[in-house]
Amino acid sequence: MITQAIFIIVSLFTLVTALLVVRHPNLFSSALYLVASFFGVASLYVLLEADFLAVVQVMVYIGAISILIIFAIMLSKGMMGKHTSPHNQQDRWVALAGLLLAIILLYFLVALVQWPTTPVGPVPANAIQLLGQDLVGRFVMPFEIASVLLLAALIGAIAIAREREI
Amino acid sequence: MIPLSWYLVVGALLFVIGFYGALSRRNAIAILMSIELMLNAVNINFLAFWRYLTPKEMAGQVFAIIAITVAAAEAAVGLALVIAVYRSRDTVSVDEVDLLKG
View 1 (spheres, rainbow over the protein chains, first blue to last red):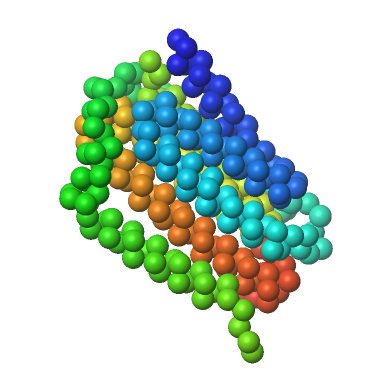
View 2 (cartoon, each protein chain N blue to C red):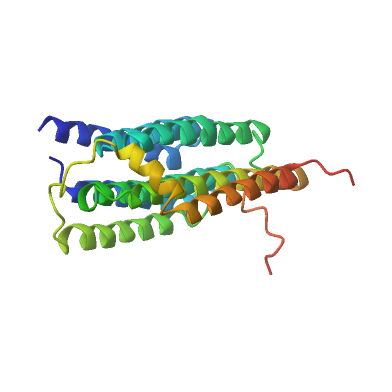
């Protein structure tokens, strides 16, 4: 009962702040609401007993990606050109399409499928140890590819954003 | 205990919010933020399925970690592109970056 109440509060917080991210006219406030939304998602991970992922969520999303976004906003602030509205002309149609997508997703997710209401078993006590062993054992290939991808992104980001002398 | 479908509903709604933001915002940085929201929704689904269906297998968590890695790489390159566009065209509005428009 109490976990369900916590879940509902956390999800409502996440969804409301996410909605503020996409609707708020001030870009900087949007970025701050994005941090709040990431924090709500991290709380959901805690409810799912994925402790390590919750910490990774806080460190990578809140600690790195949000800071990167805030830096990008500060480097390009006030440069929205001649437009005053933060939304484009197809705003209403996109909202309609999103509503339709939500109805389709919720119909196929909730009404059509019988999802289990309880987990099949408890999370093993040494879950983080198993995760580490899997990362360098069974899933070593995706792990290495991810590291190459990060290296490529690092070099690519520097090469793209660097000031060129023409 | 919380039913699995509740998590799926939250994931679906978060994904739709991100979808709406990615297609309706003018500012390129706001579009990137919306894409991050969509990736978060995907991760919620990964971890919910992991917890309820295969808690003994760590594959679900590995999927989520790889997704977070890709999201971080995407954010870094995307924001570098925004900075580059801002430097050459003095705008971050995607409506005004229309060199390829016929």
